[in-house]
Length: 216
Image (cartoon, rainbow, N blue to C red; front, side, top):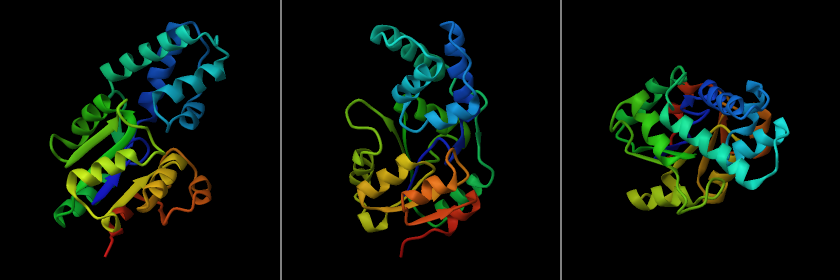
């Protein structure tokens, strides 16, 4: 079974996230955030993303004010999550090859579950993935392995046969916490050296390399 992170692994969402972040900042009269900073802030879900963004622009620490901004961002993004969105080149071909081998393919993200279930079908089509799981309040976000456990139990898969792909230090820690084979994807939102520090089982540099990763 293959489990894929979404942002920075399957989909290049940085332009979309950057658009909604700066739309939100403009709405509240706050400063513009460079795309490279937005890239650094993603990976832990929208709550952390907004907290880091607001700290960067020097916004008030008032909890109610920050919650209002978070809610505006979440609604803006969830209403139009496919804007400026695209799959990385070579991703679809690798996924097709895996599916043709009869493998289970799933998605697991810190992005809200409702948003995940919009962006993945929009790019890959309905029912292309066997299961899509985003963040829900009923379980902890990555690097907790809870979501991976939910996916594993759903399909009754042995841990030794699961492969997890991600592009961030959060993903590498999540895979390690779950005790599964973890693959760092260096084309995403983090540099290769960031992934190397987390000691994944392997690192690949091109989406085309995904199809060559197998568990025997």
